[in-house]
Length: 251
Ligand SMILES: Cc1cc2nc3c(=O)[nH]c(=O)nc-3n(C[C@H](O)[C@H](O)[C@H](O)COP(=O)(O)O)c2cc1C
Image 1 (cartoon, protein in one colour):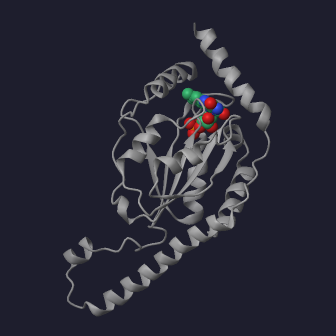
Image 2 (tube, protein in one colour; image 1 turned 135 degrees about the horizontal axis):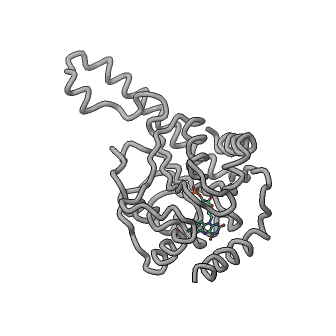
Image 3 (cartoon, rainbow, N blue to C red; image 1 turned 135 degrees about the vertical axis):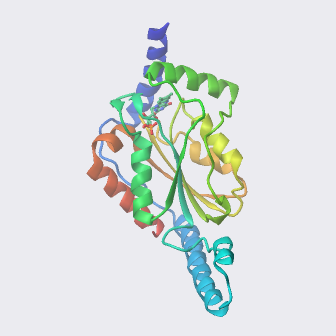
């Protein structure tokens, strides 16, 4: 039975891999002008919010420490208006063996470093099996059930973020169901959502438009897809691809 499952996963992945090729250095996708404009608009808004906050601070000599804490501007400190939220699983995985840090987490950390963002690791209350085949089984069942697995702790003050980078691996041609739980958990209205994902051949697998449909009140941009093995084993190429992509978006 286990061999059949492994074969099934392998067939799915190898079909996808022919389209992508394995071990290729990462290359940044092109960025549409409209995507760049959307990011710039949010970043400009953050700048003007910061300026307004500074002006308010000057005027309110009488503000107490308690009031300051309550009204503390989300733009205090660099990058506070940008969140990198990601799902990523370490342990045994396809093409990379047993890893300490998930492929998507590696990309998430590069992005957070580059743009000075806060980070949130989307983790399920019930962890996924460390064994790859067992994890494939659980994920497949969750997909079939359209499950919404409970996720651990939440993002504090989600409303403060204007831009949310949303990262995940492709699981069975979709996002892990926990990413849907995450999207269900917050109001994404008027936020710019920038997806990124890792995979082993499926690319983004239609997930960027799926996110767009799932979050109709957000502005969902085209994202960046990088092969998981490349993220795990070719850090220079990956870092460069992330930097180029972010440059293209205007960060
Ligand atoms: C349960 C499961 C299902 C997967 N399904 C696919 C798939 O359909 N297409 C694909 O290209 N890769 C698939 N993969 C490979 C992952 O997308 C890839 O290894 C990814 O980089 C893992 O990211 P992570 O380490 O951040 O979790 C799957 C991996 C797992 C564990």
